[in-house]
Length: 146
Image (tube, rainbow, N blue to C red; front, side, top):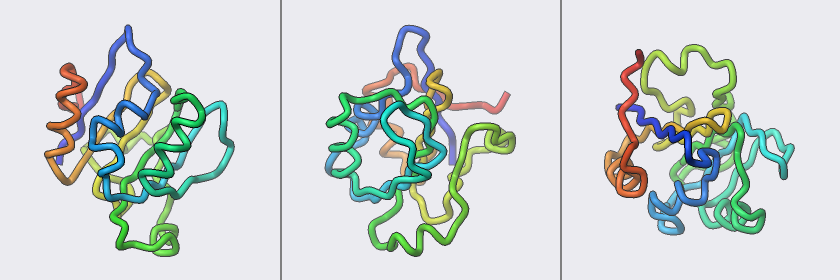
């Protein structure tokens, strides 16, 4: 697995609508566990939503900036109860996160992190999502852990 990073000084890096739509939008067959989030419109400990519900939430709030947020895409075959048995993924002050490309939640296939609004990262078990994202974000680059 590889982690890819998108950072652009002239770009609003914390908006997830474009990222999710670039990955297939409503065609994504995942439930999303959103954790370690900081945004102006929510103060929940976590969200557990289908792709459509997540897109509707984002759209109804005018594609808000996610200052922090870990978006774990989990196959729908797993129940919410199964998903919540594990520790919540996080990014803020997670020093080991940058040592290797990992997906923190053991049931997730994909993980997107909005990191302090300055960039986002993606790790996926399926390279097709990376290829799709590269079409929208040509400067997406592999993180070399330097």
